[in-house]
Image (tube, rainbow, N blue to C red; front, side, top):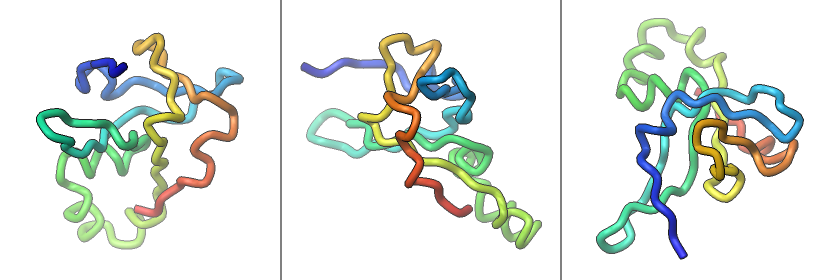
Length: 104
């Protein structure tokens, strides 16, 4: 059974871990087309995710050089995020997403 949620409802929401610690804001939702539907693959948290969503990541990195390269973003798999309360998304476990830090 699939469920639907409007992407714009998630963008900018703060994600917390199971202990209530802030992980970051959802800045991008990555999805792939499967037939007539779009299926979420992952969520990108952090400032670099926002820049990527606004198609400014390469421009900003070019302007500020290595400074932009020092920031980090985090990718969370679709199945690692509890969206039972979309206003307060939570990681399913404290360690979820830890191996998915990405350089800018």
